[in-house]
Length: 408
Image (cartoon, rainbow, N blue to C red; front, side, top):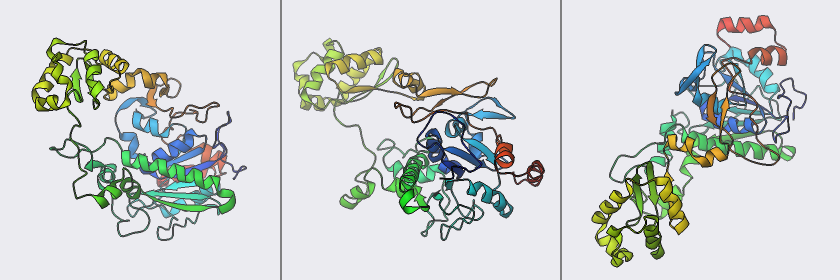
C-alpha cells in the first residue's frame, strides 16, 4: 500500500505495520488508537492546530520542550508519531489535506459539527481528499448518523452516558468518574482493531470507511444492555463490599490490602497470615455465620491488628497460605511496584539535552519485538518542513505563507 509515497517511516528493524502511513486528524478522541498503530510501526503523522493540541496543556508538566513545557500526558499518547500543524477546519486546508491524504493508507478523523474536517462529508462518510484505496476511520462521541450525532461530549460525559458511572463509587455515595479519558481510550482500542482488520482484508475489499461511536462501544461493554434486559432498574447499580470479615479492604501501615475470603479454608489461611493472634483464636470464628453475627466488632479487631503490619509482608504470607489477597495500589504505589518495573512498562523519553519524561509505554512483549519506541512525542510543528517541503514537495515560501495566514 503506497510503498513509494513520499512520506516514509524511519529506517529500522521490522514491525508489523512498517510501511503503513497514518494521517491522524482526530485530536484527543483518537489519540490512543493512533498511539497503538504508531507503536506497531506505522508512520503516524499527527495533525494539530497551530495553537497546539489542548492535550499539550494537560498536567503534569515536566521540563521544557522548545517554548512549551512538556506534558507527560501528551508525551505518553504521542510518542512514536511525527507532528505537523494545520487548521483542518478551514477550507483553504484542502490543498494540503489532498497532498497528505494521497500519501496515507489510513486516515483517522473526528469530524463533528463543532470541529469539522474540511472535505469530510459527515452525511455520507466520504472524504474528498483521500486515495480511493485508503481506510478512513471516523471516531466521534455518537457516530456519524443518528439523532445524537451533533451532541457534544467530553471524556467525562462519554464515561457517564456509556454506563461507567453506574458501577463506580460507594453504594450510598455519589457516582464517580474514572480519571483521564478512559471511555475514549477504550474506544480507541476497538478502532485500532477495526483498522488492523480492514488492513488484513484490504486485498479483498479495498478501501473502507469505518464509523465508530464511543457511546456504542461504552454502552455495549460489561453486559450492561443484557443485564438491563433481564433485571429491574437500578438492580445492577454500585455494589457494596462482598462477603464477611476477613473479606474487605484493610489499611496497613504502608497501604491498602484487599482480602477475598469466601471458602471455609480461607479463615485458617487468614490466621496463618496474621500469625495466629490471640484475639482471633476462638474456634467458633471458623464458622462464617458466627463472623456474620459479630460483623462490626470483628471488623474493628481485624482493622486494629493489621494497621501496624506491612502490607507487602501480609500479601506474601497470605498468598503462600492460599488466601486470595492483593495490595491496592494508588498511582504512586503502581509506578514503584516491582511487577510493572520488571515488565519494563515505564520508559524515559525526551530529546537530547532535555529533562526526560517518564511514561508508560511497553504494552507488549514478543520475540521478535512487535512494538518499538522510535522517537519522543513531537514538538509543536516539529516536522512541518520535513513533511510539507521535503516529503510532499511544497516550497519554503508556501510554508511561510501558510504560517503568516495561521493555516499552519
